[in-house]
Amino acid sequence: MERMRGTVLVRSVRRWIVLLLAMLLLLSLLRQSLLIRRIWFDGENSVDESESLFALTRLRTGAALYLDYSQPPHVITCYMPLFYWATEWTTRTARSWWQMVVQARWNVYACWVGIGVVIFASARQARCQWPAALLAALLWGSSELGQEWANSLRPDAAALFFSLMALWVYERRRTGAHLALSVLLLAGAALYKHTVLAPLIIILWEELADHHYLRAVAALAAWGGTMAIVAISAQSVTGGLFSLNVYTSLAVAQSGSWPWVLLVTCLALGAAALWGAALACVSIPQRRGVTLWKRYFVISLLLAFARSRIFGAWTNHYLEPFAAGCVLTGVLVQDLLARSPEEAVHWACLCWLMAAVGITSTLLIYQAPEVIRSEVDHEDRQWKWFVSLIGRFDGPVLSEDGYVTVRSGRIPYMVDANKFAHLQSDKKFDDTRLLHMIETGGFAAIVTRVAIDANLRPTWAFPPRWLAPMRRRYRLAATCPVAERDATFYVYLPEEGR
Image (cartoon, rainbow, N blue to C red):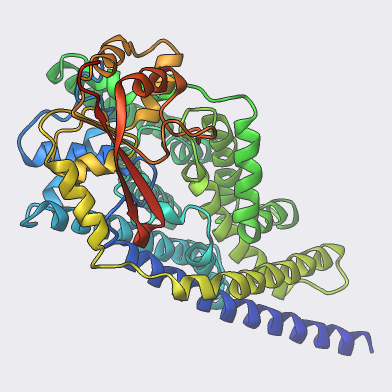
């Protein structure tokens, strides 16, 4: 009787897993179709994409990559040079600025899909059968966590792809050659985004645990030497502007409560994978192929929490633990099929499985209609008219929306006003010249997303310190509704005689 009950329970678990796989596959297809359509969206796909687009534009025209952001144009080029150089090289066939944007976004999306492939391969490497490995990859493709980084000109996807590839290569066969290739991939990841540290820590940890002390020292020296050579060279060539740009963004902090808010947000958005990984860490015994991913999950989660104090931190900081969590969740599902139903941990895993099915079905019910309805308007007539209007002004334009000025073909005066407002409050940016230009009517136009006399303004808008002289010196000249984007732009011109 007990044996029969156990057989029935195993069959029931398999049905739940098949149901979860089917729902994840459907949700993944819906999300990927939306991501692909958004590649052609004429606007920012992430909050600071305009900074990267302006940097790429400068490279294409032969201008300097890293600028002195204390002088106009006020823009911070906050990533490592390989990200910009590689993107510029892969978009050289583009015949127009817009073709360049689309090609660059396709490159990012290819890396995003590649991450899913590496997650599948890593789960198989951890002794998962293909259904469990496929479930791990679909968790990545279906989750809402970090979707805006999949088709936006940012280095997150490429850096994570190189990092996961490095761990997969290292775990495939821990020889000196595989270690060297892993270190090379990790150097590439860090030359895209300099905050990538967790995979290197994990590989060094594994080397030390295997008593390969000389190899660990050599790996660290090779990685550190590469980074030092690039940093010193870039610092020398740019006259100190490299460190001013790349490390300035790390020196601006947010409120102490923000890391906790972001952690709770990510635990909710990536609940199935992150909570599944946590359960895998405590329920699955240590073994080769799994221990590395456990350590990677924990270390990357701790580093993500620590880095989220940096100004501008969002869900992209949790992409590493989420990817590791997808692999571990695949291992958890595989382990669930192999465990005896009498084990207490089996019931804990079964509760997770039922919760994951519930979460995924809820997402399908509430988000699938929204994803199906959402379309990118390729005509976008109102938007195109507004962009052409901004391009016709004779003189500098100050805009809350940095993409507007970059898209219009102008050299923007300031790309991310919100970031520079925070730099000013931290006394890392002197806005005296900016205030003088506002007070004297030095801007040909000022463009806002919210009226400057509105009582309630979002935190990303112009700060009160800039609004006061705007209200005195500028008048509303045009209200430009863009129905396709559910947005309204307000254009202010300087008042004559003031």
